[in-house]
Structures are given as C-alpha cells and as structure tokens.
Length: 350
Image (cartoon, rainbow, N blue to C red; front, side, top):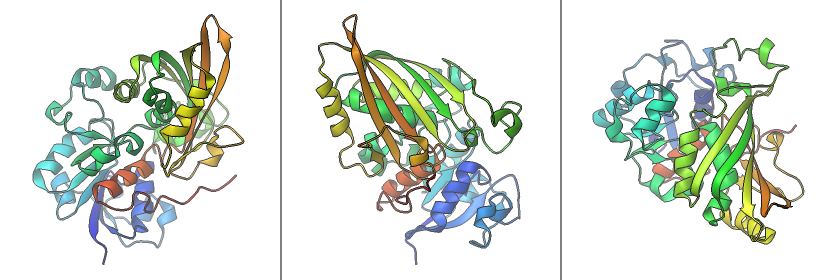
C-alpha cells in the first residue's frame, strides 16, 4: 500500500498531464482524485490520450475542500487568480500540504503582484508563509512548508543560469536576458498568437520588459546574493512544443578573473541531481526536453571598457523542470521522500 494520497486540481491542462503521469508511476504516492471544470465525468484519457488504460480515475467537479479531503498533498494546475481563491480554502479546510503551480503565491510583495498580474491579491496574508519552490536554492525550507509556490518556467530557466554568479557574490547591477520558449507554455486553449499556423514558422516577442516572471526573478536572485539587481527580460515564442533556452548577459569588472566564474559554476550545483553542466558543449533544449533536468553553461568575452561580458546559458523543459516536474520534486521533499522519485528518467533524443 502506498504511503501518501494526492489530489490534483485543474487537471485537464498540459502541466496537469505531466503531474498525473508522474503520480501514476510514483512508488509512494497514490493519486486518488483529479478535479476539473472540463471533461467532468469522463476518463482522464479524454484530455490526456497518453494515459489511455492506465487509470480508472475520472475528472470530477469538486470544491477545493472536497478535493483536498483525506489526502496528504494537493497539487494545483489552476490558472493565476483562480489558484489564489482555492488555496486558502484548502489550507483552512484540510491538513493537506499544497503545491501551487500558478504565480499567485510566488511574490512576497502584494504590490508587485497587483502590478504584474493585474489584480489585487485576494489573500496577501498568505504570501509571507509561502515557500518559493526552487529546490536548488530553498530545499530545507521546502521540506518544512505547508504551501509551496512552484516557480515559473522562465524564472526557473533564468535563475538557474544566474544563481552561480549570485551565490559567489559576483552578480551586481543590470542583466539583459532573452529567453525562447515552446508553445506548450501557452496552455491547452489556442489563441490568435499561439495556435499552430501562426506559431509553426514564426518567432515573435511578447510582454518585452514587462513579463510577470520578472519580479520573482528579482526577489529570488537578491536573496541568493545579487546586489543592486535589475533584469531586462525579453521573452520570445518559438516553433517548439517543449523547452526554454535562456541567454543572460552579465557584465563583470575586468579585475575578476575568468577562473572565478568557472569556480562559481562548478561549486553552485555540486551534488545537484537535476542540474548538468555539459563538458564538451553548451546547453541545448533537445538534451533536456521530456525530462526534469536542466543544463547550464557560460562563455566569457574579452575585456572592453574595463568590463568583461559573461553570457550565461540555461535550458529546461518548460512543462517538467519549469512546471509539473519541479512541483513533483517539491512534493517529494514536503512528504519526506526521495527527491528524484519518478523524475530521474532522461528525455528522448532527438
């Protein structure tokens, strides 16, 4: 018999599909219910055809308290603003721990939430107690958390590329970042700028310099040791299904030797199971697509005007390490399980 029980809310989306897939094969956690306002009464394969025949569960229309009843953990794949209304009800009406994949509890500053998400936060009193669910930075806090706010996909990618410099005390001032993302990050419902005919042979930016992941990047990197940090972030939609590739440009004083940068990247992720620094190549999406692994790397430019540019590269699968997989990683930690349970498999290649 499995030790823990889990429920999923918002179960019909792409992120939920990854959560459900991992839970169905989890050695210690049993998925007991999946709630959704779509496909009610239908088998999970109605939304997720790759799950055909793997479970007898059906989508249920449930209030948050009912979905959380009798389970140890609830994983939320709900949209921003919807999650913020469900989480307080789960915390008050059950003993379940909560892993929230939305952006509703990532920020400590309610004013930043209102600016970037376009609405006042309905329960700002919960923001201080939520733990930002990046295991490579907050592992011990996640283990003790009741509410984990799983990071955004862009934020995860960019942070993993910059954390080595921040932890080493080398990151100061403004950083310029361009990150390219796959179409699955736009969700199940096609929109005018995201459906296949427009996306398949196109590159376009959206929300340049004002993407909602900017404040969580700034908050988190400052806690890791960055000073006077600012990020100028331009996201780009690309004709990929999965994956994010980020390039961040950091300017270091010329007095900092290149060896210190290499040492910082070597030390930052020593012993981390899901972070790789390729030895003979730079990070690439195809190497991590379909997996919970991330790749990081860097190149150092020549000295110009007393400064040296470091290009930090990072790549992840947006649905797994950038979403559902990282949520399951945090779930494993809050339940006291092997952090890598159901997540150690590599993706396919090519």
